[in-house]
Image 1: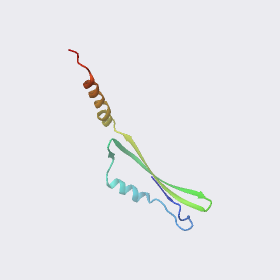
Image 2: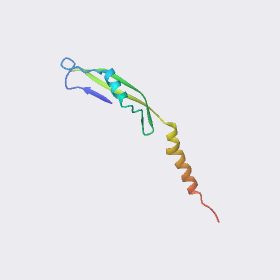
Image 3: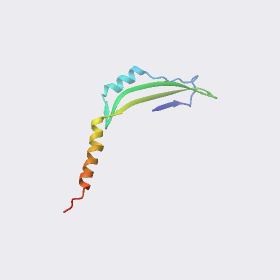
Image 4: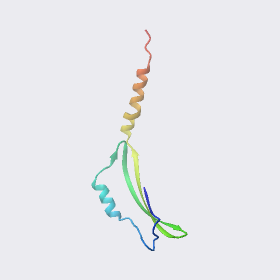
Length: 92
């Protein structure tokens, strides 16, 4: 997720992450798993954009996820096997 400040140059307005506040606010909710995704880590990045009309700030947050293995089994493998079993034609 990226937020850019291209309306005001750094001379007029400067933005930065308050990493301690952000990380504690996200960890207070204790949301580590969404659907079949498991949250591993979060990165807060501050970049400078150099343009012709000035220097601008860009804030980026990167969420690192991995898929839960047990959910892959239930979401894909079991339905596939059930579909194959149901599709078998029984001869008399």
